[in-house]
Image 1: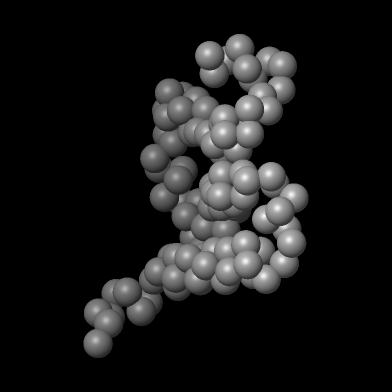
Image 2: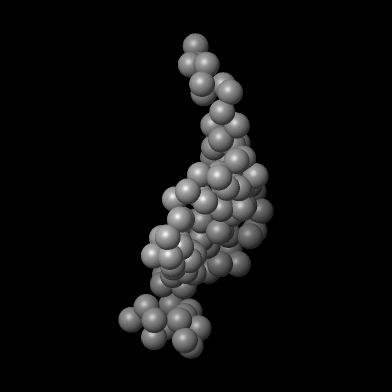
Length: 108
């Protein structure tokens, strides 16, 4: 049986739904449709990049905003959080070797 605090926490439901949605999406896009072929062998990095971009949007809908506001209380934390938004682009562009101009200099 699940503990009572887990049942009352909408973030727990959001996490389960997010992971299940990613698994179903992977199954549908990687095997059932021809979408994976369009990425020329870089589907895994594209899908991971997509998942990392959707995480903030998804979890803000499940009450993470207040916790995030507490964590990002100083300017260095906010700057680090903004820099983390570049990680999905790097995960997508590194395997495909398709950096766009200015970003190439920043990551090298």
